[in-house]
Amino acid sequence: MMKIAVVIPALNEAENIGDLVSETRQYADLVIVVDNGSTDQTADNATSFGAHVIKENRQGYGFACKAGYDYANFKDFDIIITMDGDYSSLPSEIGRLLEPIKNGSADLVLGSRTLGTIQKDAMPPHQRFGNWLTSKIINLIFGVQITDLGPFRAITAELYRELDMQEMTFGWPTEMQVKALAMGAKVVEVPASWHNRRAGVSKVSGTIKGSILAGFYILRSTFRYRAYRSKK
Ligand SMILES: Nc1nc2c(ncn2[C@@H]2O[C@H](COP(=O)(O)OP(=O)(O)OP(=O)(O)O)[C@@H](O)[C@H]2O)c(=O)[nH]1
Ligand SMILES: [Mg+2]
Image 1 (cartoon, protein in one colour):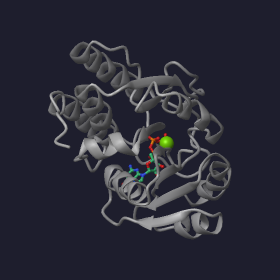
Image 2 (cartoon, rainbow, N blue to C red):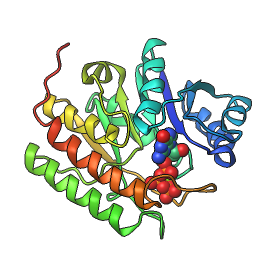
Image 3 (tube, rainbow, N blue to C red):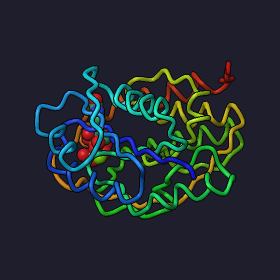
């Protein structure tokens, strides 16, 4: 039996996190919410709905992810899933991400919104373009056919340990998939749906600053890690 942890990085997601945690617990052995300096009730709500809450006060999506992944790895979980804290991905689709790892065909499974469905207005045009462009560049570098850079994904703890993650802000997801491809790990995409955040305010794609920073770190990570080799 593989032990499954879900890591949810959350910055001021108090209105979403309770329902999200309780639904996600149906599909995982542990839900880890990394409270990334929230000023609302995110941590309390996550705890009362049964999550293990970690505080990571250095702000940045990558810092939050790393704190959660390292805890899951330390606690000997076999598979680590990430999901945003705003209900933009559906816990009921976790099974789809797990399947290719369980049957041995993948070490990293990416939920592709391009192959799945995107709710109206859930992804602004600049984000679609950025994902398309970066996917094209990655495909040219590695000769693969990826279609997205989504945050909803599953990785084996074994591969995670080999990645030696460095990007502590918006570059985290791109670093993960570029390094995995550079190492020759088994990377598979499955269709995933994408929804408007259920409540609360946007911190990335709905803001100009967030979008520019995200675009910069995503592109930089693509080139920076293209020749990565694991030291482990
Ligand atoms: N930007 C940002 N997001 C963080 C951070 N830490 C955790 N998060 C979480 O990362 C996820 C993605 O942020 P969102 O604000 O939903 O970004 P987005 O999906 O581009 O924008 P929306 O259209 O509002 O959904 C959410 O679960 C945030 O709560 C952080 O330091 N910065
Ligand atoms: Mg979101």
